[in-house]
Image (cartoon, rainbow, N blue to C red; front, side, top):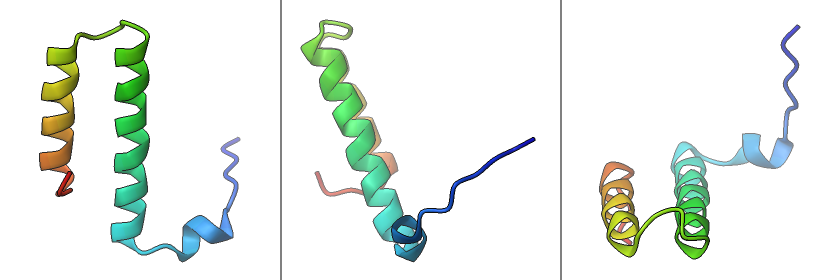
Length: 59
């Protein structure tokens, strides 16, 4: 059985706002990886640059 929880706040966001929040979440994950030594600074920089470009963010 697939259970989903509807979040009224999330549901009210526009597509662009949802994408921006996803971008921020992914950026935070990259920051945590860097902080914990799971990736190098070069890997972080490249991943963030790619993420920013692919998601249409300005940085």
